Image (cartoon, rainbow, N blue to C red; front, side):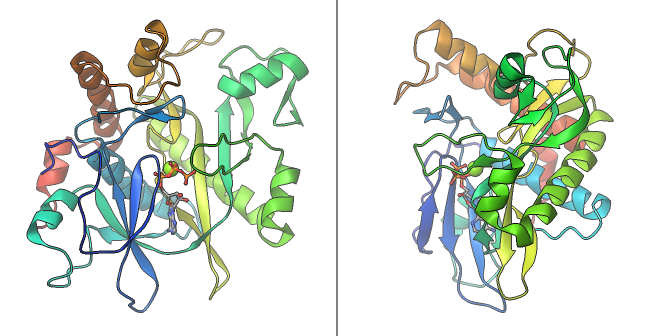
Length: 315
Ligand SMILES: Nc1ncnc2c1ncn2[C@@H]1O[C@H](COP(=O)(O)OP(=O)(O)OP(=O)(O)O)[C@@H](O)[C@H]1O
Ligand SMILES: [Mg+2]
């Protein structure tokens, strides 16, 4: 049920392929193309650590928001291919039980199973976070020279592609230059990945800005269909977990901005000396306010309430 907090995914009818900080991936029976069931839990991480309790409805918010973005970006980024096939598991009778179906409703999607490029395709439209720290020291961002005199959180003259390594669970991603990313993914794919990441960011940022949200930066992942040699946009897309969202109405250059999603949680963790500690349980007010932020961003970006979006789903 959508109202229950799902921190571990109780699905035994399908083989589990892997578990990340937020998602569990399940294998699906072979069809025409390799697919998998991409399931988003209500787990939340902050400062690279997963909290003990979850945020109710977060899995559905991230899933339905990504689905919306696949639709929006397909129509705005020429030639874009993406992994999303449909919400929920395939409608094959007996594939999953009715209880599993209910649990998966709104939080799962069937996607193409692809070979993931081992980089995080980050795009930045504004200078903040680790990019600001680097800029202050060397006037570069991921080793790329930048104009002088930029202020904290200022909009960059052009969005820039600033990849990082994709670390194993528990490790930290490392910021790298586009040249280093080229060495990792190979000459054949590097330019196209950069071009796709920038185009998706620009299209997404323009769409969000019309709805009062600034996308300061975001992380995309891409995968390769080895049969056809085509690149696909994969993973979650332009969600509050993968992006830094700011309220356009509150934005002011020259100072830190409150980010839309985990700010309350991060503040609570640092104020209580719990930053980076394992097994921390959030109190109800932090859970509620964080849920409120995620819901707000969902409604602004999709123009629909989560309740309505869930009602609109089949079965
Ligand atoms: N179409 C796809 N085919 C195969 N794997 C995919 C596909 N789309 C996304 N993935 C992978 O699924 C995982 C999603 O899980 P989750 O978001 O919880 O991971 P994470 O904690 O962000 O950690 P990491 O991304 O570093 O593994 C990611 O590893 C991502 O690369
Ligand atoms: Mg992820």
